[in-house]
Amino acid sequence: MRFDIITVLPGLLESPFAHSILQRAQKKGIAEIHVHNLRDYSTGKHKNVDDYPYGGGSGMVMMIEPFAACIEKLKAERTYDEVVFMTPDGVTLNQGIANHLSTLQNVIILCGHYKGIDQRVRDLYVTRELSIGDYVLSGGELPAAIVVDAVVRLIPGVLSDETSALSDSFQGDLLDAPVYTRPADWNGHRVPDILLSGNTPAIEKWRFEQSMERTKQRRPDLLE
Image (cartoon, rainbow, N blue to C red; front, side, top):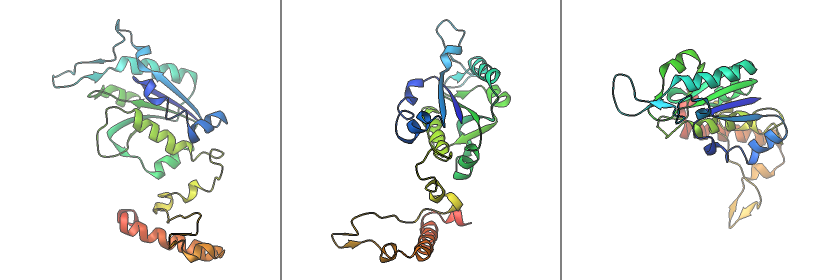
């Protein structure tokens, strides 16, 4: 799977993609992550990518021309399944969306800044608008990194234990059950006996019940 991320701050994305699961996925050739500096597509003398908003008002607006030039160049090289724009007014990212995106081949992600991007970019190029929550960040880079992380870990071959992702919280609209590891007894705090029993059907039943209870307490909206 290939991601092309368009941003004015490419350096901000260096670290998230250079470690852990995302790094291993790239080394295995399972995922490609390419970061494009939007300023490289500016025709302005000072490589500017923003201007004052028509109609007045505060803040600066990112221009359509650099985005269009970059997107058109990428589209001339391959076919893209989605062009995603990270924005606070987009659909909130959830596990179902991550599952869907993980089945695609090529995805472009646009990172906004300042007051926003020219609406014509959204009208002409964007196929999906995503948010990571009801709050505003300085730009779309960190949300883009979150989307890539949530998606890449689902691609077969990325995780050493491929069944691990299937039991994560929000798969099946339930939160995950409590997990434990050694020691079995730490200062009188014991691991539940059922997990030490070796009775797999009973353990799975316990985990399901715990997932239901935790979801009921913390995220009852998921059960609706």
